[in-house]
Image (cartoon, rainbow, N blue to C red; front, top):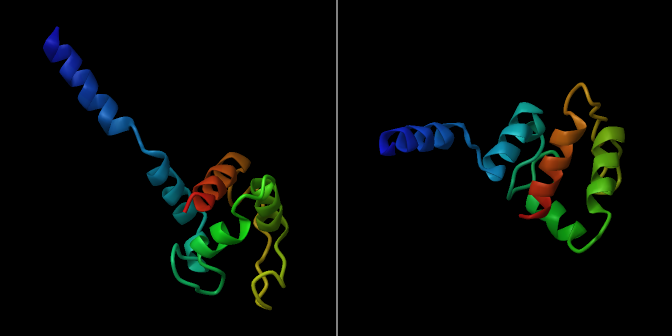
Length: 104
């Protein structure tokens, strides 16, 4: 019995992915890292700067989701962010990524 529990625990440990890992993987898969980094400005703002700007804003996830989906310019300078549709990042992945960013 103990061996079975041990094997199951190992298997679950291999399958389980922490929310931080999952969100970082989502961001990498969606290629957000081409323009953004956690703690330094690239083409777009650092994720930590985004988190600071939207801290305490109750509708931040919805606002940022709309910005990602529609693209735009002017919030962080004049370099435009192109729109990113659901074919690039699903709604669920986008929400998870934004929630992760806002916790930085």
